[in-house]
Each structure stands twice: as C-alpha cells, then as structure tokens.
Amino acid sequence: MLFSLFKRKPKGNLYTVAFYNLENLFDTVHDKGKLDKDFTPEGFKKWTMKRYKRKVYKLAKTIAEIGEKSSSTPPVLVGVAEVENDNVIEDLINAEPLRAIDYDFVHYESPDERGIDTALIYHKKYFQVAHSEPITLYVNNPNGERDTTRDILYVRGKLSGEKVHVFVNHWPSRRDGAEETGYKRVKAAQTLSEFMQKLELTFKNPNYIVLGDFNDDPKSESIQTLVNDRALYNPMDKLHIPVQRGSANYKKNWSLFDQIMVSHNFLNHEKGTHSFAHANIFDKEFLVEFKGKYKGTPYRTYAGRKYIGGYSDHFPVYIQLKFNG
Image (cartoon, rainbow, N blue to C red; front, side, top):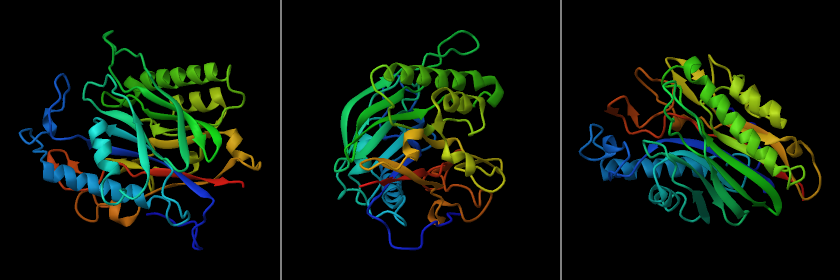
C-alpha cells in the first residue's frame, strides 16, 4: 500500500514527475503491419470501444491523482509506455479527469512489432519543449535477426525555467528469460549512455531525468551500467522490497522495473533550480486487486485472456522535485 510521507497541506513548490506503463493502451482498430489484432472487437480479447473508453478514463483518473497528497500541482511530466499511437494519447489527456489540465505530449512511432511506444505527457504551464527525437535501439536476437523493440524518447526543454533532458524508456522484455535477454537491456543502457556522453560535449553538467519500464530491477547489470557510467542517482533502489513492495508482480514476486533516475545536480539546492525531494510507488488501494488469485497485486485490464476491467498490470512510480525559488 501507499505509505504517505506527508500529512500536512500539499505544497505549491513540489512538482511531480511520474512514469506509468499503461498496459496495452490500444485503440480498437487494426493497423496494417502491426501485431495488434488481439486488441480489436473481433480479436480474442474482444477489445471493444466500451472497454477502451473505460480504461482511458481509469488511467486518466490515476494520473490526475499521482502525488496529490504532497503537491498542489498535477504531475508536470508523465512518461508513459505501451501506447499505440497519437490518438490514444489524445484520448487520454482529453478524458474528463485530465481535460482541465493544460497537457500536451511528445510521441514518435517506433519499430516495435506490436505497435506500442513510449511518450511524454507534459504540463504546458511548467514545461516547454525545445527539442525531441527518438533514439533507436539496435539489438539482435540470438538468431541474428534484429529485435524491433521500442525507441528511447529524448525530450529537451525547460522545467519552470531550468533546462532538463528527459529520457522515456521501455527496454526489451524478459519474455524469453531474464538471463537470456539480459544482454539486450545492457545494450539499451550503453546506447543511452553513449547518447548522453555526446550531449555532454554541448551541454555542461546537464540535468538528466531518466524514467521508464526498464524490465530490470535497480540492482540489475543494465541499470547499474547506466547509473555508474553517467553518475546517476536512483532513488528507486531503496523502494524495492521483493517480498513486500514493487511496481509489478509476477508469480507473487514484486519487481521494480519502473524507475526514475536523476543526475546528481538534483541533489543540490541552488536558487532557481529543482532539487530531489522524495520518490514513491503510487500503489493506492483503488489500483490494487482486492480479491481472488491476484489479490494484492496491480488491478490489471486482463489476466491472460480474461477481461477484469482494471487499470494496468503496473503501478505508476514518481518522484517530486522541490523548486528553490
């Protein structure tokens, strides 16, 4: 469950940065060349417009509430994974719980064979985009064929006037085994590190926010590679308790694949900058399955083939940054 760190009035100088794997946010239409037929009314998941709209509303409600106990401002940056296209993101930010917030987003189509991508939703009052681009991940399967996995989304902009570099990730899955696929995620870490190294030739002491579903835990080789190569701080390390807490659950074991890392600049407290305040997993009761086989785990949309009408098979994670005015 969510352990509240604040009981006092939400603060106006705390800003929430979140990440949420939305668990297959597909529309109901098949896209040619993509493996998305399961998510159509005729597919085996019987993905109807009614089910789609219900999911969009629930995800929007969740995003609106992340960090609200301690911040008076809705999330200013929300990285998302498993979105199919621009249309589903438009529907998400225009759903009733988010409609009144001035949100926009950055998204690129990736080569993922299922058609799921990453995106960055941002509050236009607090964040202005200066540049964005996808970082292609070139990694092969054991047979030598390319694994058409998700790109890493890079967005540069200003958060309350301070320059930041944001990376939204959804690294290769563990579907064929954690050890067997580990090299792919190490390659993702190296690809991102090399991109950041090039940035550092132009930008002195850049402010990095690296968020995503990394399909690895904080202690995994891939995450350690990135953290050590680029001297990042990973506050999620302290939140991962495999038998008690995480952002996703598989066979009664908690993982914390969803993480947010920052550069050490955010540990300073200079005027006009942001400093790291705290991190948490957003695992409020309404996001938790309350009965049956999956009791206590994320209240997902599907359990295998069975539609159960929940939110996502992941909890969101978030950090809060204090603006030093």
